[in-house]
Image (cartoon, rainbow, N blue to C red; front, side, top):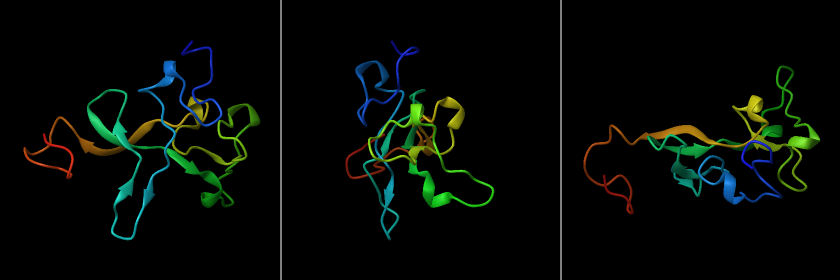
Length: 115
């Protein structure tokens, strides 16, 4: 299923895609707090941000933000998809390194996690 089906279906992650793909956009506040998009990367060695963005925000003469219709996984959002991984069928992955889990000082990183 993983290889033959879509990574995201109507904005939701199918069971066969869980742990490899993500569907939460990183939303940063003024104090640089990132909401809802931090998860483990597929290698389980890093906490990472989901590479899911509205590509139209980066449109310029050198960057075409369009996503082919077949690879549009979010209804009514033609420009939402992976920014750094277009060769992976525009599938968003937790690929923007946030914390190296193999090299974290002992103690609390957030209010909810301890290493």
